[in-house]
Length: 356
Image (tube, rainbow, N blue to C red; front, side):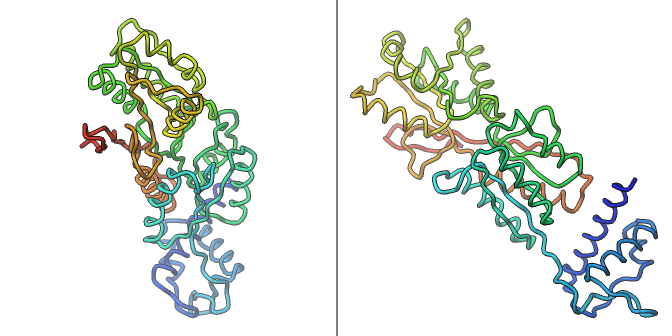
């Protein structure tokens, strides 16, 4: 019961602060009456009275006997809302995170909400401690790109959900936990990649190259693998899916290209493609003419091979919009959004184009 009353107080307090901010009220400007607040908020007199008493203690408002409620002249400045974006790596070498930020920023700017960015460095404990620290500093909500080991321990995410604290997960989600999230439709996209390699490049064999520096059980990789398995099952009846580490591909490349007329190679992300070519060059291995690579993420400014445009700016934008709604409507139903990416394909003249 105590926690429920506390939650009501926080909701009403935020609404009154929003009212002050939205109406540009200044110190000594008059606020609605207690009766009006009760009618508008539909909270009980006890909840409204407690909220007003607490806000007076905090210095936000003052009561003047017989005159009503007023914004406090000497009270602390009205708290501007602020959310935190938690990402696992810095922006310097990761176009993906920059694009996510570019989608978040205009949504927050329009709502006059501040943004704090924290980097977990793929460290679970740091991610968890950052969430706890920011809550203590009265951050209003989170957009979280979980670090790779989140499936081992996501107690901090469970705690956020139990407290009904506003947050949205991006790129990754927790299947067994119903939370708001925005992800790429990786499963269907990987199926489309395999279809392109089979029908457009006449590949009689396709292999999938996993990222050994990342975990296979993160939801984005799981869905790519699931899409790949489905594609092989449907497109190549009776053929077993082949999943390899990058070094396995290099070591078995000669045998594969000798055995198959055209070999398709689906990489988990674009950096793996670049590393593959660099490894071949370092070993003095000529790139076989019958291989057809396909990257993922469109990680570089110039496109050098087929890849996938994920529209990570749309991921950021959608996540920010969900969070804005959650701040205003804490009891809103959870949303699961999948952004539809597009393939970037060779145009037949040495260049590439984004599919319609």
